[in-house]
Length: 189
Length: 189
Image (tube, rainbow over all chains, first blue to last red; front, side, top):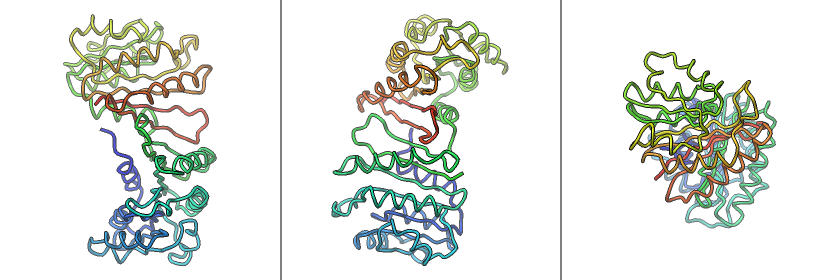
């Protein structure tokens, strides 16, 4: 009946993303978001994906099996807080229409590489500055692992503090599930 | 881009409500929900609407202008906490597939008639007991008026306490808007 969190994130992104767009997967993980973004932006589009772990870059690369998608995805082994500099270099003069964050750690990977509040907040602020008009940021937070609740609290506090004239922020959350993830979506005005 | 709160409530209700169903508008107010429910359940369906204020019943009645809708809506000048008894009398043996709550006070009306936590929680518990399998409860909370924040807090606490095997609860909220309403949707498992 209700879209699961990740499907809802994709549904919102797909409402705004158009062929030829620049899109960012800020947390490659297993590359699911990057693959979907690459399909959506089409042959003239570009996706830039970030992760600190080589394992994540390899997983993401392996997932780009649809014809042509691998050619339009740039994988960068850098923290997402470096997004502005990377985009300036790899896609000069272009603004992303979608930036997707799927926080936490790579499933099955080293939890020491889990995203952290400081760098996550820096990356979110950067994404909001970079975003194209009509674009969207989605953020999925996971409160279940060590540090996850603190990161979610920090992200929610940041989102609540965005002045309403600057952006609309929507929260979508399964409320009575223990340690369930939550989804934020942010669209600039 | 994002559905406004009330539209999202209607979108969810419309996903489950079918011709011939019983539906409940637990807070008639100006009758907007009742009118939409009456359209949706069709000629074989039934809508029962609750409000304490005659003014609300009159507004709701005046809004039932689509052909045939007035004949399938029963308006009851009773608090929604009496829902079970009213349904047993007016629709014996039938379970509602949708129960909509739009809390607070009648716009332009007497705020002394605003919904209150105790009776709201009693009505919600009753609605969850009565609901048909595959049905839905929607609740829009308004934190902006006197007592509204307390009522929202009480509703959210109640919703969080619903055991996951019993129902799924989703929260949809504009996060950075001052005193913005929030929407809960509850579907039994």
